[in-house]
Image (cartoon, rainbow, N blue to C red; front, side, top):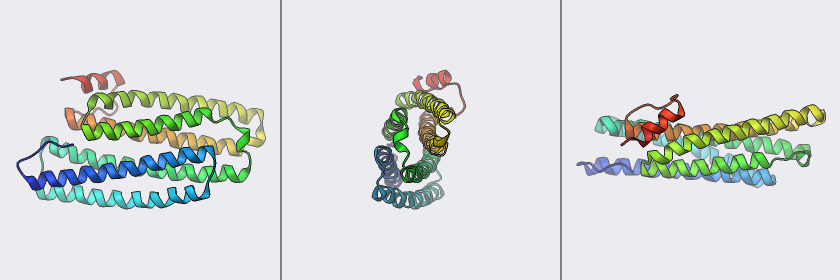
Amino acid sequence: MPEKHLSRAFDASLDALSTHLMEMGGLVEMQIERCLRLLNAYDPALALQIRDSERVLNSLEIEIDDEIQHVIARRQPAACDLRLLMAMSKCVTNLERMGDEARKISKRMRHISESGEAASFQVAELKKCGEMVHSVLHRVLDAFARMDTVDAARIVRDDKAIDELFRSFSRRLAMQMNAVPRTISVALEYLFIAKALERIGDHAKSIAEFLVFVVKGRDVRHLPLDELEREALAN
């Protein structure tokens, strides 16, 4: 991922950080896959795996951030290298928060399973949202590994589609709650799941924005999408 430097030790440190970051990302991908499986059928064993993996992600966040701090202290990097290390730290935080959201989804699906009301709901939109979130996460990790700002800009745009699916599903849930009041409690559980997926998409978008920051040297958070895309595509 990073460019080579005169110091082999510095390169080795950056390569190790990149490897650990991608390992953490792969674990989060697995968490999202497990959540998608829970949406199809609740499995207590799968829920336990999500809980245990979330604890591993918490430990990885601390470990990787500690490595980053040591590299900054020892190497005193400047310019692009410092941006890269800052972005890595931000990515680690976003990945850990994705793991938190996966754990929330697992808990909500347990509540839904215990209610016996899952069959009362059509969740095709929710599953599609989950699949899109999983795809966006995979793509942003790949883009970060290649420092690909073009793909990063596409990911930011795709997050808008995830947001729209969330809004559409939320509107349909509100209609069902009005029509069938006895389903309100379970509908709210599904709403919390949809919001968790939407937040995971937001975290993936944040990683894409930090990627543009690393390569282009400009903080593109909060910019209009068209301006972000121009920055990402500029030579």
